[in-house]
Image 1: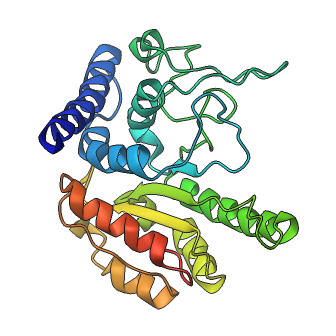
Image 2 (image 1 turned 180 degrees about the vertical axis):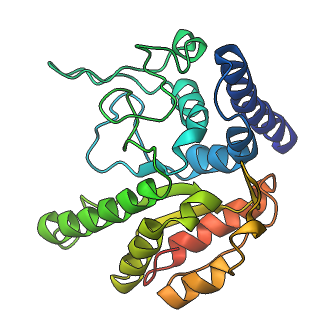
Length: 255
């Protein structure tokens, strides 16, 4: 049974990768590398940790997922399609679900699968993310909002608001000042409901990140007051589960 589940997991991950490859190839535009590399990470998060209701993408206590690397939008569109996130059934709501036909029209004029995710256009997209680092900043705001709602609405024995906020970013996000400032604030406020996943692959369009970026990001985040967990191989789903478990056990710091 365990072996069969592993086969199903691998098939799902490869399906995410294939959708990304095919969509970018058909559009003759886009970024297939990040979705392919992050597929096992995002699959593990969405399949085993992210709390959401595909039938109600506006459920107030859902976990939030922000794709700070907005150029990797096909990763998110594949996840939304495969988990069958539906368009909200509310009058005047213009969110649209991601169908296979929408993926075939990736990056085309008028599609709900634009080059970067757009809030209020596509069901399940929590934030518009284009400029690198912006999504990380948005996620800190979401984590602060959760703390505010928790303080105002929860009562002893009735934790009606207890959701977490996850964000995936990359080297470009870490290069941006907005991410550093947001991270500093999150550490100061001890937002233990916030988890950033940093895809550190050492490469940019221009070449190696070593051309302009050589700091130890993990050590910097320790200085900000964060809980830092390292996963050496994105394909190691067991290690990813251990790291996410470490996030959930941490009660005093963002991870």
